[in-house]
Image 1 (cartoon, rainbow over the protein chains, first blue to last red):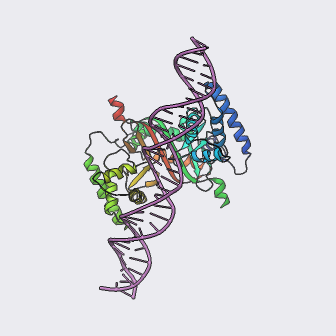
Image 2 (image 1 turned 90 degrees about the vertical axis):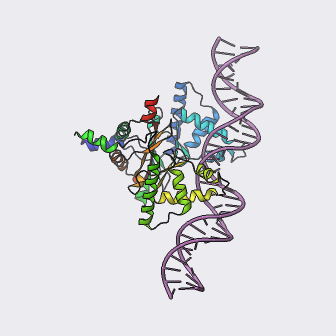
Image 3 (image 1 turned 30 degrees about the vertical axis):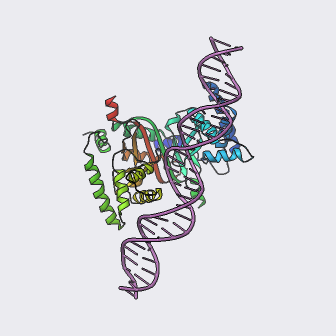
Amino acid sequence: MSQAAKRKTADAPAFPKPGHNHAHCTKEALRKAEAICAARKTKLTDIRRQVLEAVWRSHVPVGAYDILAQFNAGGGRVAPMAVYRALEFLMDNGLVHRIASLNAYIGCAHMGADHHAAQFLICRSCGTTAELESAPLNRALTQAVAARGFTIDSQIVEIIGVCPHCRDAS
Amino acid sequence: MSQAAKRKTADAPAFPKPGHNHAHCTKEALRKAEAICAARKTKLTDIRRQVLEAVWRSHVPVGAYDILAQFNAGGGRVAPMAVYRALEFLMDNGLVHRIASLNAYIGCAHMGADHHAAQFLICRSCGTTAELESAPLNRALTQAVAARGFTIDSQIVEIIGVCPHCRDAS
DNA sequence: TTGAATATGTTATAACATAACATTATACAC
DNA sequence: GTGTATAATGTTATGTTATAACATATTCAA
């Protein structure tokens, strides 16, 4: 196997497919979230779990007020603060990411590991957003930043384009 | 000169210094903006120039409503739309960038060239924000994205950390 | 069981951005 | 120069995202 082929394999887990078994994604995410909160001794309360579930409805980032609307669709009385607090908790615990370019939130695909070095691919056609997790990219980034004498705390990397499924469909 | 040293030199123009001659930055920016608009046959009208000047007051990204406040400080009556329209024009013409993580705007440091492949270093201490323009980083990014079958349209890369001047001062 | 910490409720408002339509300026064709 | 199309700006209203500030309730451990 060539170096290039190895790198490609390592860097390129599948982009979420339109027809995949998403119930499985959600279930796994919830399971991991429980485990992480248990390990960290933080509490995945009702509202936090509900927000996490809302975020995992799909692989499309969801706005805070969309989550709110879901909650209040059946006559609920949840206030924005409740949603924002839950999102804050979920982000602090590495369960959810904020997508700055969309003012929206998405479930973390790699719960537990290296939560703050995430990169995102955002399909402008279907909205599906995937985490990139590219080691070479992270290395290049670290190096470029260090060359400037800059100390890195966190990063926002959001790539907007067209996902393979939408490309093939067009 | 080694390859590494060459790359470092190429990648690392100076981070804006606290005491630099900023009037020069502003003057140069305005001059280039005039030239670019002339070349593109677009019009750098009064309000657009004023917004550009406001954005170039410093190397710290400025919010749209901050610009608005500057305009209206002397009893003006400019509406938010005017500012947002000017910002849109300036961005379309490659003169200004939006910093998504701050909801703020900054003058483009490399007017004319490759406006949509910009990367930013944001100092969380002083707010100073610099463009990175790292070719190796762009290569790594392009490659990582391509490996996923993703077609890239635009990118948002914002690195939050501490700039060399703030680091040395602490 | 009471006190400290955590979580949630509630109300109000701040901060950022755009829609929709009216008016004015510019340019250029005739 | 006049008409007319396009671009730019003005104006009003509203939409969207996020947080401040303070009250109440729950949890858990000493």
